[in-house]
Length: 149
Image (cartoon, rainbow, N blue to C red):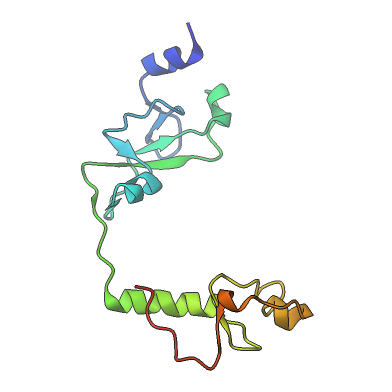
């Protein structure tokens, strides 16, 4: 009998200090529980609910008595609510945040990708003279960038 078959027969039992049931990798009932990313992919959000269970990582599956060091929290799918629609104000805030990450502070060009501002502090053209393709940025003299959508 494979190890996976033995895990499938074992019920979820609390091993953590939270007292939540823990599931091994690959044994979670998909119709009952989901991680935050799985909920988001389905167009749902946890909606304020506390985690209902813990998913143990693959590395901790070989050590059943040990507390998992990288747990993933699972939320009940039946209590999840649809993701709120993006409002105009939220879209404007997102565009402002992305503009700050993709605008060179030296030449004021807004690129179509995120600039390495933490390490270089500016675009590559301003940093070391590497010419930038004009198709990758908006000129600084153009009108302010509108919203993403």
